[in-house]
Length: 204
Image 1: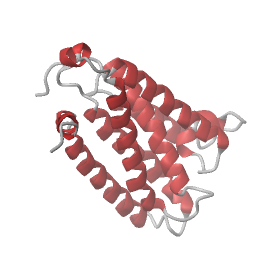
Image 2 (image 1 turned 30 degrees about the vertical axis):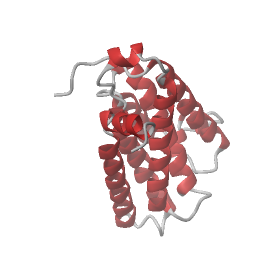
Image 3 (image 1 turned 90 degrees about the horizontal axis):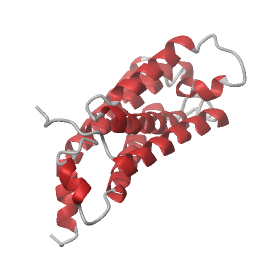
């Protein structure tokens, strides 16, 4: 193994990246099974529960991997850690998008792959920001609360701003929904890259 490759492998292991990738693959398989069970390929509107839940599960898995086992060492390292954090978050988010999108193939103008990618990025961004404020263990809570509230309360909402605040349940090509989700991802990724996850005790 090259001198450059060894630190990357150690970093990946310390952040449980292999286990995270396996969990993301399992989440994608669950999403595909759920979409098939709901006959979502016949009626795209039935995909909304899958589009709300699968990105939440993927974001929770990613959030757990943001745990820093040696915060003191990270803060005193010679090289800055923000590039590694950013690559980790962006890489896992890209993998999640790629794995989850096939669960909702077809109908891109409604609830197809674009909506899945958008929701996954938005949930990952909220989770990354929450990891800084709450810690990696509880990073899934804000995204879960927000998406759940939107899923339950947005069905009868009207107005031009609905696409922005109710982005998790919008059709895939809504510009306002994309702007909100990408904004959430950019803000969460920047905050996590600069600050890292909140310091927590050792994993039990």
